[in-house]
Length: 329
Ligand SMILES: NC(=O)c1ccc[n+]([C@@H]2O[C@H](COP(=O)([O-])OP(=O)(O)OC[C@H]3O[C@@H](n4cnc5c(N)ncnc54)[C@H](OP(=O)(O)O)[C@@H]3O)[C@@H](O)[C@H]2O)c1
Image (spheres, rainbow, N blue to C red):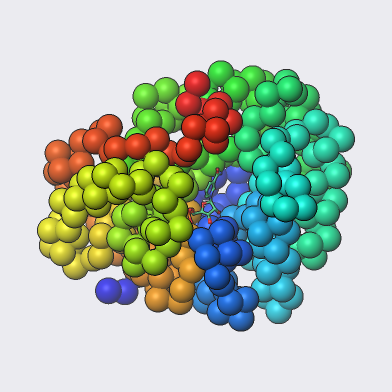
């Protein structure tokens, strides 16, 4: 299968971005041991194939992920890259979660350290990882808009917020895109969030496209995710059986189930950018190959029948983390 990355615009005001984007979280030990030399090869393979989107968070590997990307960019053209960076998730020295901080002064502080770790003078899309319940979104976005004016940030994004927050944020400054989970198994955004984004000209950066490896993964990380409801005993078997239902469709398309799942997200609209957590070189090739999988309305309807909306079993996150999702309120 020959395929190339193609280009989509992130919302009405955002940058052009290659599709799929590369989600870098899994390259910092989040899903178990990783080897930096191997991870650098993964990032370089993606960039050398014409990829532009590197998605990260300052808390991924507690700064490790940004430093890894900084290393990867040293001998590559920074201007080719759309650096999408999340901030706001606080961690203690033992790695424990300490909540979210999106106060205006915290935004500036987080960005300063990110720029150092990444070795760049600006990020392309900057976004609070979660809504800070103690800070009105208008204040966070206002502070980010000042960083845009000063040239440190090109575009403002959001992550896992609901329709009301989207509207309030967009009333302060242009929002390029909302990063949120969206896949064949997770379609809650279709009710209210996706239509609101479309009304406001905000793009979608879809993550969890492979449901963290539940869809078409090697199974290598599954055991380490047993704290996630969808991987818990009983739920996991049910969910894997759901995914198995589309194997035949994938085979007919000469694709893997993972490629079908990436193509499914890309087929939801030009305003939806799949971001995939490839961790190995063959997964980079495979995600690029997903662009050769053409899905028409008939294919999408068939997949709908095989995996009906809401058929997945288990919440997206454990209860404490679900409570942090403005998008689920
Ligand atoms: N905004 C947010 O709240 C948020 C939350 C989570 C993630 N994200 C972003 O989204 C990115 C992607 O999320 P994710 O890594 O959790 O989920 P994902 O892309 O759904 O799943 C990643 C897993 O899928 C498997 N995989 C990757 N490429 C594959 C391929 N071509 N074929 C088959 N299997 C493949 C790998 O598992 P195996 O090792 O088992 O093969 C990999 O560890 C992250 O890196 C991060 O940048 C954002």
